[in-house]
Length: 99
Length: 475
Ligand SMILES: Cc1cc2nc3c(=O)[nH]c(=O)nc-3n(C[C@H](O)[C@H](O)[C@H](O)COP(=O)(O)OP(=O)(O)OC[C@H]3O[C@@H](n4cnc5c(N)ncnc54)[C@H](O)[C@@H]3O)c2cc1C
Ligand code: FES
Image 1: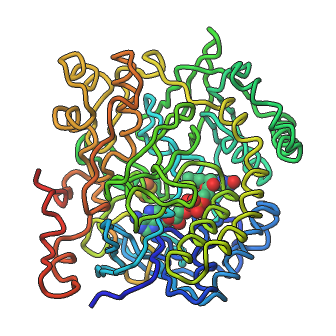
Image 2: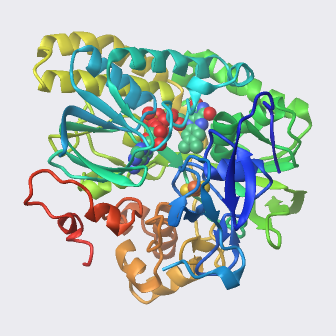
């Protein structure tokens, strides 16, 4: 749903997303890197159980909260770094990290 | 140990950058905190790393940010990127989190320049994945070079909606429709405000050019639409609305919303600053004097966070605040402050000419009819419009009481997304002005941070306990 316009010299980082190793665009936020790689979902709503996607990309809506290196963080204000472990808990069975 | 500064500035948009540069050039100890990784704020996001292509697309106004950043970088002011401020006290203590560690700073003065956010306007389906702020997609282009590669629909109201549409068209993005809730004919209040706007033909011409670009692109463009709905199963697929009695239906791989911008007042409310209500644009802003001083001597406000007037005015108001701060800190005398302020005030006036007209044309519309009963109002806690109406019918009259009864505003976003609309829903139900509904109380931390991080923070002296920071929280 998004494409990169500036494809020259794009650097990537290796991270783990939902248990799978993945190469994502470096130097941008975790949420932008996921969007750049075709991912729209950020988590399941802890109240409705339905999938959520980022809405504001400026740290306001909290729809991009996900587990990053073990802590619930806003993916749109967190810069992606190599070896990050990102968990969105998109299948209900794996859902237990919300308070 | 906490560090001491003459001025701590929160927010690295045009207001914060200009204030920081001005103060540092006068030899004052300043640090600028921002949760973004680079300087620029919303408008000049990531400007230091912008590609030549982006700079060309965004035009001369975006370039201005480069000069601002360059000046800041030479000024000797400190910059703490990736620093999320989660608490500010009226005595000048500022707490922020960076890379998993929290820090405390002490400042003689704090300048809050946290900018604005897009006005959240709930409608059915607005919480589906793929429904995003127009500003969010603007941010993605600036920060990451990303552009939608699906068919896009835009809904809402305001100049930035049309600006985003024209930028997307320039980049070759297919737009299925632009659905404006703005009335087909401007209200009479706007007509009366046209003469001063005519002093800025440059501004008006730019707007007209944008509209004609949109027209030439062939995108279907409607005004005065009502009853917007985003539809889709797991994500947005189509958008539905009404134009008069005609039902409209358009594909939407992404649905971009924009209903104007409102000040980001969370920090001001946290500190306890007095707020004022903007009747026409229906938002709260901190009460401040002509230099940006709030009701607290040590707390200043500048930029769109102090009332939305756009990027140039933000830059100017940042400088005015800096001049007064320099006077307070004994670096310049009163006459010099006034002398330096004079051309800035003239520039502010010049910049301001078209705004009353634009604000009136794009005045937000809220009524019982515009707010569908099944709409999810609070995205965090899944509270619907009808839940709030029920509480009001049962006699609840204040937003904070509604919060307790319905959980509306209790989630991690602390009411940032539902607060303004919550007051509108209540006001419409009671046929009362929304400002009478109050504002949701904001408590530290402004953003959720792990308790261990707070507990391990080094505090000034040994008397203060981390737990004291949250002593009001259980209430
Ligand atoms: C999403 C969005 C996109 C926009 N795009 C355009 C555009 O393309 N063209 C245009 O003319 N106008 C645009 N505007 C309006 C424009 O942003 C403003 O007029 C201008 O940026 C205001 O400048 P400012 O200095 O007041 O604050 P801003 O530029 O908004 O900067 C505020 C800064 O404060 C930081 N901040 C906020 N809270 C915290 C916290 N708790 N801790 C740390 N940092 C914090 C933010 O990260 C941000 O960098 C946009 C507005 C929004 C909301
Ligand atoms: S997308 Fe809104 S907070 Fe991250």
